[in-house]
Each structure stands twice: as C-alpha cells, then as structure tokens.
Length: 248
Ligand code: ADP
Ligand code: MG
Image (cartoon, rainbow, N blue to C red):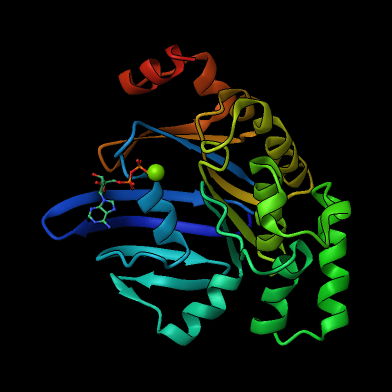
C-alpha cells in the first residue's frame, strides 16, 4: 500500500471558546473520492478550509502530498503554505469569479499571475479547461451573463488551472436552481472518473451513491461514521447517519 495522499489526525479547531473540530482523523488515498455529509454547523466547511490552509487549526496534523500543512498544531510557514495551496483546489458554494475578467481570463489568470506561465500557454490551457467543462463557446463573455451552473463550471475550471493534486468542494451545488445542479455534478463525475482525488461536502445523495468511494458523516465537530460508501448506504450504523439517509 502506498502512503495516503492526505493524512489527517487529531485535528482540533476552535473559534475562541467554541470548539468546532474535536479530533478528526482521516486518511485519503490518491484517486479516492470522499463525500462528507452532516447537519448544518457540524464543522464540514471548517474541516475543508483547514485542509487547504484557509483556517488555522490549533492541534493535530495534516499531511498532503508528502508535505506537513500542520504538524503537532504548528502550521507551515506562509511561503510554503502558498506552494501547498496550489496543490489543493477549492470550489465554494458561491462562485467568486472575477467580474471584470472574461471567462477565459478567469481561468487563465491563476497560472499567469501565480505560476508566471506565459500568456499563450495559460490561455491555451484555459481553452482546454473550458472545453472540459463544456463552456468553450463562452470564453469571451463576462461572468454576469452566465447562469449559476455555468459560473460554477467556470469556477471548477479555474481551480483546475493550477493543476491541483486534490480538489475540495464545499456544497458546490447548494446555491443553484435545481435544474442547474446536474450539469455541475456531471463535471465533478468526470473529474472523479479521471482519477482526481476529491473531498466533497454535499447534500446530493445520488452523486454520493454514484461517485463516492468513502462516505464520512460528521456531527458536532467529529466524524461519527466513515467507510466504504456502498456499505454505509446499505447498512448505516450511527443514528445520525440513519437520520441523514432517511431524509433522502
Ligand atoms: P458546516 O459547514 O457543517 O455547516 P461550519 O464549519 O460552517 O459547519 O461551522 C461549524 C461551527 O463553527 C458553527 O457552529 C459555526 O457557527 C462556527 N463557525 C464557523 N466559522 C466561524 C467563524 N469564522 N467564527 C466563529 N465561529 C465560526
Ligand atoms: Mg458549510
């Protein structure tokens, strides 16, 4: 067995007096798709944000791609943190596209500004990525003219432009009208099939059923159940899991 691509142990995070993460342990293999479910406020977003250094945890260890993001509660120095962030792409519920840039510009700007890629190379890659998410015909328009589903597909292409090793998705379809959810999930499915390592917080259980290797159930800052998704779907053990799966 090769070492996990992501290894998290004893992760604790609090905001002031409020303990939000109370000891998270999780190993993720290269190519694994982990779907995280849990009630609102259980710490799912905080957990993902700790995994790409957007939030500083106070205790524990996070190792990604052989690098310690957090070791015994001490975070990487900022310079190395930026380096590591490039390997961890993140897609949020709100798309956060740059409104003053064309779609192509949105997907080309990261490699240009952060990786110092030449203009023609970054644009060539952006064109390929827009093709991949089914939006090549929108390259020259601005975000305001896109639907939510299209914006989210651009956000995925933009995250991919940094050629990450891992993609984190925090409720990527929660802000979308129901009829636009499918096109975003389809792009995510394709990514998963291509072998991308993914951590996905979502309420879309059909996606979880189809795509997840591992299901993680969070409650009150802890993982209360985790394991092969199909096993948990067919035979949930924890009461919280039973409730969550019942409400489908
Ligand atoms: P989830 O994504 O599962 O809904 P979150 O990770 O967003 O949960 O939040 C977990 C808990 O942490 C909640 O009680 C929330 O109020 C609290 N929390 C999240 N972010 C902050 C913050 N920046 N400051 C204080 N409390 C926060
Ligand atoms: Mg959240």
